[in-house]
Length: 165
Image (cartoon, rainbow, N blue to C red; front, top):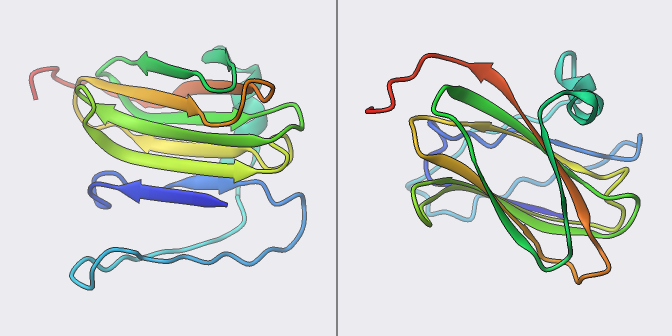
């Protein structure tokens, strides 16, 4: 299961690839906000270049980290990063985690919470739009200590941002 929240869907759209074990699946989208905040949604099978992004991010020279069960980690990144791709996966064990895009201390702009019985075939791949300076990613492994996860990230779009904006 996947829960996603965005403070502003125009600035921080929900963009994710969800592993389906190579099978057809049903996707249910539910807007839990009020009627004053409607949403537009679309679902499709991944096409290039995103269809290979999950494999590419593991072999790319971006960043990676091993996160023990119950641990919380923060990763700040440069203001020049316009778009950041991240992957949460395990070696076939339970994946239960929360990943958040923060702008400043404890100012959550976007968050995802995932539960998967096998974090290898049903990993979570997310694309964050990173507007402005002062952004960081916070990863919380919500599983117990015997269920670590692997976290990978890379900048997919770089720009020339003015850090003062």
